Image 1 (cartoon, rainbow, N blue to C red):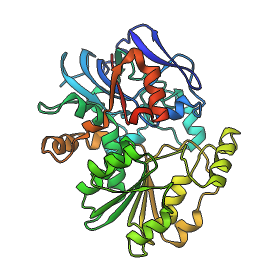
Image 2 (image 1 turned 120 degrees about the horizontal axis):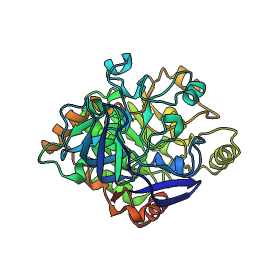
Image 3 (image 1 turned 90 degrees about the vertical axis):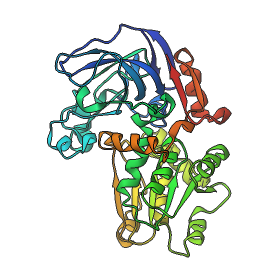
Image 4 (image 1 turned 180 degrees about the vertical axis):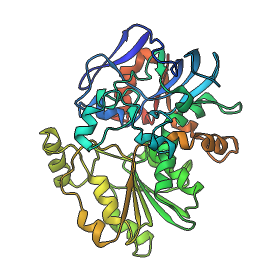
Length: 390
């Protein structure tokens, strides 16, 4: 089969490799119909995740067709159109039983690295380095999916491929961010980052009762989509003092809920902060550029909630713990437990309340994967999401 492989920092190559095989009775093999890029993949591409090996297949957001099932798999058949949640759950451990699938104890066959880094082993993730299981990713012709009875969902009739593919990751991630922010009717919500996850966090905030959503970014096309498709108020942080603008829009209080959809490679127009963060990150003196998260914490109203969806890998310098304590903020975060939400999200789509298909701006062949990632990274041609069709 053909697959898009990581060969080193900022080096991708499409290679011919052996097809995957059933390994365990609960596995299935999926023929990929669509596989999307994701902002978190850029951390792999840029070399900030040290447990990548040359030849690893990347990609974790995908739609496919079942072509083979393990002996213990029931409820799925050859030819079924399915999505697979990007974070792997086993369905049986204590965390999965509480629907905390992204905290699964059993889905990562290589738990040592995350156990050392974070204190406990973390769940497996498709195409996201050997620290998170070493699972082959979805930018390929075929993918082996473990624990299929937990992680795979049939796509209902009436939902297009262009809508369904994002229910694998971007939609449940944005929805999870709005959910853990504990949005109440009438709230003002601020969202940092208007990529795919940020767009879905905006829509999800309204679904959960927000009165206003304020979207923060610097790219005009993304702010336009946040306004046109999401109904948000857009703020370009290169044109506004974001803290002052948020205070003005909220009568001096600050947003009730703040959602960080940016993560460890945040950009800021504060030159000193940007140079400081980037230099320390490149020297491996810390792993995170935390401009967006710092700003969210600083701007959130007293007693408010900060929800962190952006991917962070390790340590951040100048973390504003004093603001969290003295403003009585609640901070919640996590990888998305999408299995909890998929059925609900399909209902929202079927009811016309949510349509993520606009995230797909650049459909292309898998063979064009390196160019697709270059466009996505550089935000050229207003690329919000490149989606590969093997």
